[in-house]
Image (tube, rainbow, N blue to C red; front, side):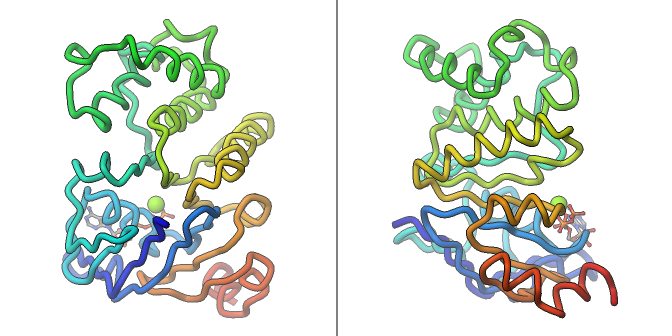
Length: 243
Ligand SMILES: Nc1ncnc2c1ncn2[C@@H]1O[C@H](COP(=O)(O)OP(=O)(O)OP(=O)(O)O)[C@@H](O)[C@H]1O
Ligand SMILES: [Mg+2]
């Protein structure tokens, strides 16, 4: 079991308590939607879980291990992959090099020039097919459409064959067809009993894909539970709509 338990986690930026004494439980093998108004600490929480930020206090338990802070190199051992809200593509590199770079950085800690591509071929082909970019593999990332870039960003997580996927707004700005594509890819992860955390602002979408919702507000837990129960909650409606 690789449940993630966040215990009294806190991250302060200047005067802003981005994550504020947060205690939550992310259940292994299901899709959890992480929602909350802009600035409520969702991305900061992902950055803490993936070691990009160091907590001011609190701990992160992943499976049987407890961390005061996570070293980005630990991610390989923990089998965690993530996507970024603003993307992490290298514009001048090809689609396939962007995918291989994700393995090089997170699986081996090596540069693109140092890795042996041979054993990764199959995984590369599979990922290109999953994200529908096989025909565009030699294009540079900057030649892709916005939607294709979002899929490539997701592909950089998928190619790592992780146990835990943290996806920061994988649907944002996508047109309907691309939304369906991403929904399909996440459904596939769910079928494989992977642990998936999805940040999303569109409540209709998150209701479709998440088994459980966690709602943040001002860095704190507002509520959690089944999507139906959470979205009916008055405090959640207030936090979103300010009514
Ligand atoms: N590196 C940083 N330096 C200073 N303040 C930051 C930093 N990162 C986040 N913050 C602040 O912390 C708070 C939480 O930001 P965060 O990006 O985690 O919110 P979010 O829930 O992901 O919002 P959104 O839905 O808009 O992406 C905000 O007030 C933000 O301005
Ligand atoms: Mg964010």
